[in-house]
Length: 253
Ligand code: NDP
Ligand code: 8X3
Figure 1 (cartoon, rainbow, N blue to C red):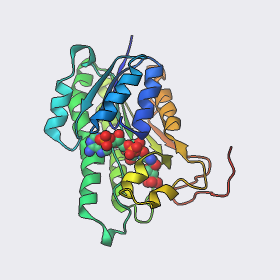
Figure 2: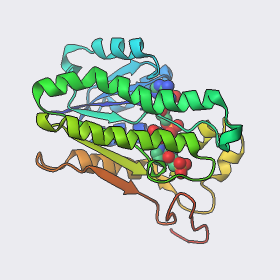
Figure 3: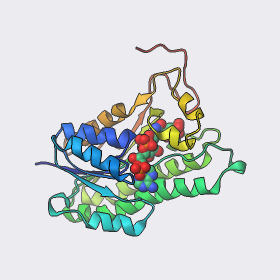
Figure 4: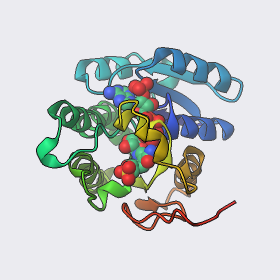
């Protein structure tokens, strides 16, 4: 039977690549994000492969989140797979110089936004006693690096919430897991550094993970047999050993 997946943050990077990967395998898609034009473009090019519905909302807005999910047409209402991917880092500053608007953005989007979307969708999964939730954490959820403070805090929270979801949803047979990538070459650093040219240097000198690498991993996780739940994945590019150790002299073709 055709499954339906809702992907937040589908307008770029990992979310968009996951939409493409899922479409290749015929998964029906609900794609979410704030940039409507991008959603429409992606909907247009993936519609030859699968059915695509778009939802344009900000995950920080609780009311808009619930309204968007309630507005789903009948053939998209049953969500089998939820990919909680929307999120970003905002700034890279020592804690004593941190910008409180950046802190709000990271906690409101990466943590509270993930909770709002989950709250709007989990009841239908508990009712059906089936479903699969994948939260996109980060290596920053497993270790803390200099100036990473609040972003790392938000991703540690994502991992704790993932474990909590897995425990609480266990009686309902719902699969819950986290995918935690290291450095992935997306718009992530453009957002973190607010368009500053330092963003261009982040993925220079080594071959970072590409969004497609993460998307293929996510598809692998969702395509396991019913009795298998991949609970946690830590995914680095070969040049990366930890948040702070990246081998920039490694030649990888
Ligand atoms: P991108 O910046 O390319 O994508 C971020 C996505 O999140 C966009 O589609 C954006 O859509 C969406 N988003 C951001 N804020 C909001 C919001 N307030 N409401 C709704 N959607 C929002 O980055 P990535 O693809 O790299 O990041 C995706 C996830 O992967 C994030 O959770 C990130 O923390 C995580 N990650 C990234 C890594 C990396 O190195 N790139 C490594 C580990 C984890 P729009 O702006 O249209 O709303
Ligand atoms: C994104 C990876 O190392 O920039 O979560 O925090 S990192």
